[in-house]
Image 1: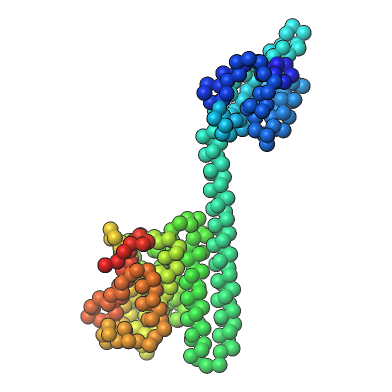
Image 2: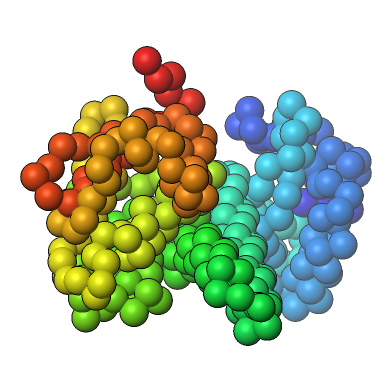
Length: 314
């Protein structure tokens, strides 16, 4: 470069940048994008004034016209009087590193945004729950009160999924085991059965994407609520086992108790209970299958659903 940087005397572009074989004053338009020029010019002016190294990462226009990034360095050549006679330097292609940095930044911004979304959804659902609880305090009869309480649990089960996503910072998949450990004890406590129901939660680690985790959570809510309300009448005690099983194709949820049980599966199918109707609707939404597993005592409900979304069912 000339002492004042107005003329580029030569540049070997190495097939990355356009070559400059003859001195040119048009290098500014050839190599530097317009939006990068103020910062490059400021660095040039400072290097000239201080007679120090030019050192800057900046965008450049590649040989084929696309924009890339280089780390450019140039040192001033001085004569015996200490005056700059020219600048000699080199540049390195740092495009992959810059793109990786920008990608990491974009991912961090996305994660922050998603965390805020899940946090706000959870908070909004908790507001809805509080409103339902307030309405329940003014319910005129026990049936209406119970209906509002169950609605609260359904909303809370959705809020719990968003809370797990927010806390885990993993927004693609919901940890079903962690969710079961959060939801099921809450339901047992809600129905005042913590001293009557012995609980076991276990099985395989399994995950679902948010779109399917929400109906799964509602389904688990209905099955466990049904156990708490009906499996152990007259303050009876017993055991509840919530078990997750993962095969090559399916995720299976087992909810098993040793309580009173259903007289027959046909009775379940004909039941007017809203909760049991919701179980069927949610299982269908998940392309799952509801099965009553024969047991000597109690009820064993198995929900099988495809591990992957959009998997066709036979």
